[in-house]
Length: 342
Image (cartoon, rainbow, N blue to C red; front, side):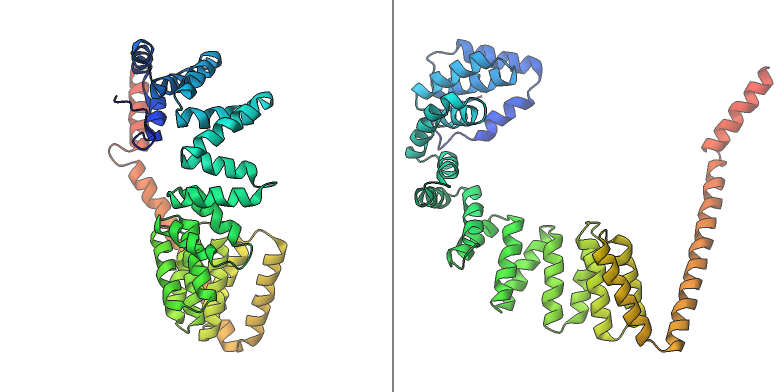
C-alpha cells in the first residue's frame, strides 16, 4: 500500500478499506507501519486507525498526536471528533486542531468547524460552509441549500443544483419542486425524470402531479402507478389516492373506486382512512345504479376468478410435490424403505 502525507492525493476510502482486511493482513499492515522509517503523518494516522479497530485507545491517541505533529489533516479531524464526542475536557484542544485543519483547506474540517460555530457564530459558519462547498464538499453543498431553503434566497437553488449534479436524490427532487413552483415546467420535468431514474419515489409522485396539472392525465397515471407499486408506507397509498383522483377527472368512477379502496387498505392513520371512506361515499352516490351493479358484479367475478386460480395453484403444488424428486415423493419413498426394513 502506497501512503502519502498529502490530503490532496490521499483518499479517505483507503483508511476505511483497512477495516475490511482479514486478521493476518491487518497484523502485517500494523507491523509494516510500526517498523517503517522514517515515520510521517500518514503512517501515524494509519496506525491510529488500526489501533482504534483493535480497541487499543491509548496507542490510538498517541498515534493521532504524533500524526498531528506532522500537521496531518485527517488526524486533526479525528482528534476533534474524538474529543467532541467522548472527552469534553480536551474539546478546546480538539477545536484548535480543527481550526488548523480548516486553515489548511481541509473540506471536512471546514464543515465540522462550521457546525460547531453555527449557533453562536453563524456568519463565520456560513463562510466556512461556502468555502467547503466551493471546494466540492457535497455535505456542505446539501447543508447550505437546506439552510437557504428556510428563506427566499437565490443561493438555495444554486447549491441545490450543485448537489443535484452530484446525483443527490433529495436535492434532485427539491430542484424539481422549485422549478414547478416557478412554473418552469420543462426544467421541473427534466429534474424529476432524473429523480425517477435515480429511484426516487417522491420524484415519481411529483412528476405525476406535474403532468396532471398540465392536463396530461395518462402520463400522470403512469407515474402515480409507479409510486403506488413502490411499497413505500407513504407514497404507495398516496399513489393509489392520486390515481383515484385522476381517474375521477377522466370520468372512470369504477377504476377510481378500486384505487381508493387500495389506498384505504394501505393508509395507517384514521384521518387518511376516513378521507378514503368519504371519497367512496362521494363516488358511490354519484354513480348510476346500473354502473354500481356492474361494479359489484365485476368484483364478484374477479373474486371468483382469484379463488379459482388459488385452488389451481394448490393443485399444482400438490402435483409438483409428488412428482419424481418432489418433497412428497421423497418422503413417501423414505417411508416405504423404512417399512420394508422393519
